[in-house]
Image (cartoon, rainbow, N blue to C red):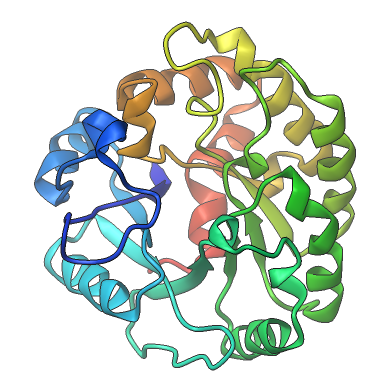
Length: 268
């Protein structure tokens, strides 16, 4: 099994604009020693470590962690897409930017950003889309401008699960499956639900929508650890997706829980 989306951080070392003491359980360091025993318990052998700061220094630190811990199969780091300086490291497997922190919703389609994404494509590096429903209308232009760039929508674009609303999100989300270079991650959903009272059935309509649109060939599991701890343990996150997907064939579940991530990120 592969966890295609997890984080580590050290408070004070890098700038995390979304981090505050109000986040409680998240407001401390999270390092490989915290996650390793959880992965062993669930027989998860590899992870994709994803940036949490728009910082090239953080990306270098994440690569240092990957060098020291075999379970980190790849790093999705940060580069300045308007002037990309792409690290040359065997475990540098993709790029992400905190688009949700940008004041302008059309940041993704600024000419300088599209140029940077085209440079990623030329290097064979995929791009993680950290977006909300309001950003999805811009994704088609990205997919069309960079047809050879593999894209993955993190957290299914953070649907409004806690409000039990699906229509606006699904109208924006479903058409993106028409682009063969776009994938999506089953990650981050528990923190979009009601943290204290969510149930598996609250997540199911959104997962079913993604499954219907993208199919098991373009979906991958990610825990979003430790962010998930706001609403659930790692065990409960994994168990919830296993429950929702239990009726799929063994082959399709293997794709979602391992094969697709290995192929998408070209993990060794």
